[in-house]
Length: 400
Image (tube, rainbow, N blue to C red; front, side, top):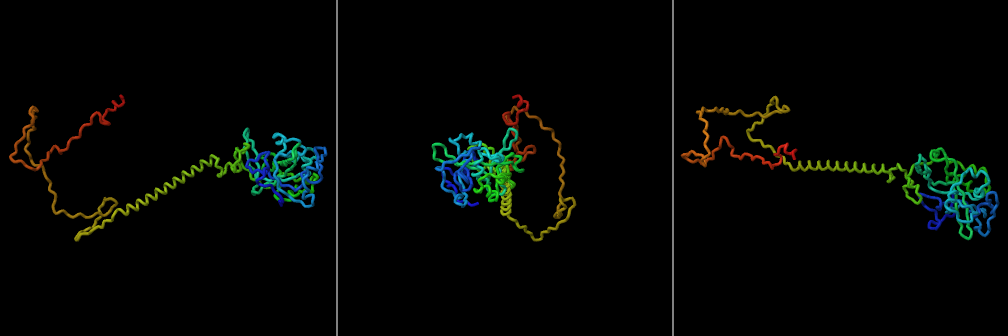
C-alpha cells in the first residue's frame, strides 16, 4: 500500500517503539487522507442524534475531496475518545474503548456509528500478547505472523478537541472478533487481521464507502493465515517494563533468563573445559615420551673375537625364550666339611667386680682387624622411648 505522509520520528507524539505497548501510548495508524470529520459529509451521529461539526475546526481540503485518494501513516493514541467529549477522560474511561467488538457494529446505533462509516483505519504492529489462565496463574503468550510480516489490524479512529483548547487529539481502537482455531486454547477473542495489501484491506480503507454495509461487516472475521504462538516472560505483565527478551520464547536457547538454559550453558562449559584439559594432558604425555626417547642414548653391543653366543631352548623358561648356553667349568666346586674341633667347656661366668676382664696377651700384635663370629660391629637399635610416636599402648591411648 502507498504511503504519501508519515510522522516524524523525533516528534512529541511520534509512535512509541516498545516491547510492552500499553493503552495510552502512541501507535502507528494507516488511513485514507481525509478531513478530521472523516469521509463523506460533515455530519456525525452521536448515538441516534445527528451532530454537525464546526467548520472552523476543519482541516484543509483532503485528497479524497479533490478526487484523488491518498493514504498516510499517522501517530495516534491507543484508547478511542469520541469527538463530542468535552474534557480529557480519566485512564479508566479510556481503557473501555481500547477494543471494539465486531458484533457491536451490526446495528447502526451506539457510539461507534459515525466512526465505522467514516473513520476506518488499519493499526500496524509486530504482534500482540494474550494471557493463558492456569488456575490462579496467568501465563503471557506472544502472537505474531508465521512469515514474520507486520500485522495490519482493523481499527477505528477519531479526533477530539476539548473545550478551551486548540489542540487536537487523535485516538484509535482495535476491532476484535472470534478467535481462530489456532488461538481458541488461549482466548475467545482476537484482533481482525488483514493480509497486507489485500483487496479486503483496500475495501476497508476506501473513503468512498462512507455508509455501513454488509460487505464491510463481512470483512470482520477470524484470521485464516498461520500464526506463531509461544509463552514469554511474565515480566511483560508489569506496565513500564520494556525489553527485547519479552518477545523471545521462554523455552528458547536465546532466552538468558531461562534457568534451564543457564545450567545447560554451565554444563556445556564444564564439558568443554574437561575435554580441553584431557586433550592438553594427552599432548603433554606425548611430548614427554618424545623427550624420553631423545634423552635415552642407544648403546651399541660390541662382539669380542671368539665370543660364542649360540642359544639353546630350555624348557620351563619364561615365554620359552632361548637362553645362552653357559660354558663348562674347568674346576668343580669343593665342598667344605666341618673339621673336628675338640669340644670345649662352656665359658665360665666372670664376676663383674673387676673394672675390666682379663685379656689374653698375644705374642705378636697383628695389624689386621679381626671379625667377631657373634657381632657384625653394628650398634643395636635403640629402644623407643615412651615419648616416641606409636610406642604407647592402645589402652593408654583410649584412657586419655
